Image (tube, rainbow, N blue to C red):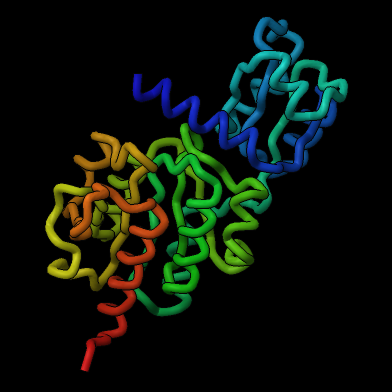
Length: 264
């Protein structure tokens, strides 16, 4: 049920967000051949998949999500242009690799500071997280390629230029990525309601901060792969903060500790 609800939320956000759309079989195929950054490919339900064979094969090799949607939805997205049953949603910015994020930290001679957005589906939230991450001195952001918004143009707008200065990597599996980061010496902190108070945590050194999705928080496997769970105290009647707001508070606590700043 939760997975279905997450899918509905993401689809709604997709339709509300203006993206650069690549329409039709040949344009989509050529975009993939040219290694264009593509967030996802949408194909019409009931369409003969054999007619998209080479495209689907390339998408699988490039780890680009392919989703089947109603033909009416394709008509809506591309304003009834002749889409031939397939469109691609282009990314507003090229994705980086995790190695490139580590390279940035090494070039600055700083311990890695990485933000991981676990299934954030709202473009404004992801854009705000990226903007704050850049301002707080993070070296990069990691997002999943499924059940999450990608670097579409709504995200780019909310990021207010931060995508030009901050690396964003997209991975197939967040849990596996956390395990990989641990092997590279990264301490994983997850933000969740049942954790220790954030201001008591030692947030110096090489760390990754994991922010959960809106309304659902950290997924079970992701939470299990965190080294420490931290939380923000809530003193009112509302039981949660907006994901980007919580991320901003925690990121600046990390920055405060890294810079050895304290109130006088």
